[in-house]
Length: 136
Image (cartoon, rainbow, N blue to C red):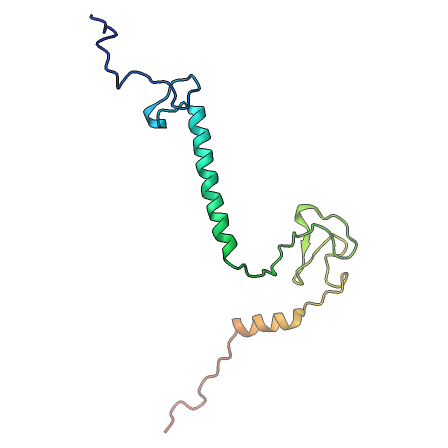
Protein backbone atom coordinates (compact mmCIF):
# COMPACT_ATOMS: atom_id res chain seq x y z
CA UNK A 1 0.00 0.00 0.00
CA UNK A 2 1.24 3.34 -0.89
CA UNK A 3 0.11 6.47 0.86
CA UNK A 4 -0.39 9.63 -1.10
CA UNK A 5 2.08 12.31 -0.44
CA UNK A 6 0.88 15.89 0.01
CA UNK A 7 2.18 16.82 -3.41
CA UNK A 8 0.20 13.93 -5.00
CA UNK A 9 -3.16 15.14 -3.63
CA UNK A 10 -5.29 16.96 -6.16
CA UNK A 11 -6.04 20.54 -5.09
CA UNK A 12 -9.69 20.40 -6.24
CA UNK A 13 -10.42 17.61 -3.74
CA UNK A 14 -8.58 19.22 -0.85
CA UNK A 15 -10.83 20.97 1.69
CA UNK A 16 -10.86 24.73 1.39
CA UNK A 17 -11.51 27.27 4.08
CA UNK A 18 -14.88 29.02 4.23
CA UNK A 19 -15.23 31.87 1.77
CA UNK A 20 -16.68 34.08 4.53
CA UNK A 21 -13.47 33.79 6.51
CA UNK A 22 -14.85 32.23 9.68
CA UNK A 23 -12.06 29.64 9.90
CA UNK A 24 -14.09 26.50 9.21
CA UNK A 25 -13.88 24.43 6.05
CA UNK A 26 -16.28 25.04 3.19
CA UNK A 27 -17.87 22.71 0.69
CA UNK A 28 -18.53 22.99 -3.04
CA UNK A 29 -22.20 22.12 -2.46
CA UNK A 30 -22.56 25.06 -0.10
CA UNK A 31 -20.80 27.57 -2.38
CA UNK A 32 -17.45 27.09 -0.57
CA UNK A 33 -19.06 28.22 2.70
CA UNK A 34 -19.29 26.38 5.99
CA UNK A 35 -22.74 25.18 7.03
CA UNK A 36 -23.34 28.08 9.44
CA UNK A 37 -22.40 30.78 6.95
CA UNK A 38 -24.42 29.04 4.23
CA UNK A 39 -27.56 29.11 6.40
CA UNK A 40 -27.06 32.82 7.02
CA UNK A 41 -26.74 33.48 3.28
CA UNK A 42 -29.91 31.48 2.57
CA UNK A 43 -31.82 33.44 5.22
CA UNK A 44 -30.70 36.74 3.71
CA UNK A 45 -31.79 35.61 0.24
CA UNK A 46 -35.15 34.46 1.57
CA UNK A 47 -35.72 37.78 3.36
CA UNK A 48 -34.96 39.69 0.15
CA UNK A 49 -37.56 37.61 -1.70
CA UNK A 50 -40.20 38.22 0.96
CA UNK A 51 -39.51 41.97 0.91
CA UNK A 52 -40.06 41.98 -2.85
CA UNK A 53 -43.30 40.01 -2.44
CA UNK A 54 -44.54 42.41 0.25
CA UNK A 55 -43.77 45.42 -1.90
CA UNK A 56 -45.71 43.95 -4.82
CA UNK A 57 -48.63 43.19 -2.52
CA UNK A 58 -48.62 46.78 -1.23
CA UNK A 59 -49.05 48.19 -4.73
CA UNK A 60 -52.17 46.12 -5.44
CA UNK A 61 -55.27 47.63 -3.81
CA UNK A 62 -56.74 45.29 -1.26
CA UNK A 63 -60.45 44.54 -1.19
CA UNK A 64 -62.18 44.93 2.12
CA UNK A 65 -63.04 41.54 3.52
CA UNK A 66 -65.99 41.43 5.85
CA UNK A 67 -65.66 37.74 6.57
CA UNK A 68 -64.65 37.23 10.15
CA UNK A 69 -63.93 33.76 11.43
CA UNK A 70 -65.94 33.23 14.58
CA UNK A 71 -64.64 30.62 16.95
CA UNK A 72 -67.44 28.25 17.90
CA UNK A 73 -68.01 28.50 21.62
CA UNK A 74 -68.53 25.30 23.54
CA UNK A 75 -71.16 26.79 25.83
CA UNK A 76 -74.88 26.37 26.18
CA UNK A 77 -76.76 29.19 24.48
CA UNK A 78 -79.33 29.40 27.30
CA UNK A 79 -77.39 29.07 30.55
CA UNK A 80 -73.85 29.71 29.24
CA UNK A 81 -72.65 26.50 30.88
CA UNK A 82 -69.62 24.76 29.39
CA UNK A 83 -70.69 21.75 27.36
CA UNK A 84 -67.25 20.34 26.60
CA UNK A 85 -66.33 18.72 23.32
CA UNK A 86 -69.64 17.00 22.68
CA UNK A 87 -72.28 19.65 23.25
CA UNK A 88 -75.77 18.77 22.01
CA UNK A 89 -76.21 20.44 18.64
CA UNK A 90 -79.65 21.51 17.50
CA UNK A 91 -80.95 22.09 13.99
CA UNK A 92 -81.14 25.78 14.78
CA UNK A 93 -77.33 25.77 14.75
CA UNK A 94 -76.57 26.30 18.43
CA UNK A 95 -75.13 23.94 21.03
CA UNK A 96 -76.78 23.24 24.35
CA UNK A 97 -76.19 21.47 27.66
CA UNK A 98 -78.04 18.34 28.72
CA UNK A 99 -80.83 20.33 30.37
CA UNK A 100 -81.55 22.57 27.37
CA UNK A 101 -80.97 20.10 24.54
CA UNK A 102 -84.66 19.58 23.74
CA UNK A 103 -86.28 22.14 21.39
CA UNK A 104 -88.99 22.94 23.94
CA UNK A 105 -86.40 23.83 26.57
CA UNK A 106 -84.54 26.43 24.54
CA UNK A 107 -87.43 27.89 22.50
CA UNK A 108 -86.06 26.64 19.20
CA UNK A 109 -87.00 28.71 16.14
CA UNK A 110 -86.43 25.82 13.70
CA UNK A 111 -89.59 24.66 11.91
CA UNK A 112 -89.52 20.88 12.35
CA UNK A 113 -92.91 20.36 10.65
CA UNK A 114 -91.86 22.06 7.43
CA UNK A 115 -88.57 20.14 7.37
CA UNK A 116 -90.43 16.84 7.90
CA UNK A 117 -92.93 17.64 5.14
CA UNK A 118 -90.09 18.45 2.73
CA UNK A 119 -88.40 15.12 3.49
CA UNK A 120 -91.66 13.21 2.99
CA UNK A 121 -92.35 14.94 -0.33
CA UNK A 122 -88.86 14.12 -1.54
CA UNK A 123 -88.93 10.47 -0.45
CA UNK A 124 -92.54 9.73 -1.47
CA UNK A 125 -93.38 11.19 -4.88
CA UNK A 126 -97.00 11.15 -5.97
CA UNK A 127 -97.81 7.97 -7.94
CA UNK A 128 -100.87 8.37 -10.14
CA UNK A 129 -101.87 5.43 -12.31
CA UNK A 130 -103.92 5.83 -15.45
CA UNK A 131 -107.53 4.89 -14.63
CA UNK A 132 -108.43 3.87 -18.13
CA UNK A 133 -106.43 1.03 -19.58
CA UNK A 134 -107.23 1.87 -23.16
CA UNK A 135 -107.45 5.43 -24.30
CA UNK A 136 -108.40 6.64 -27.70
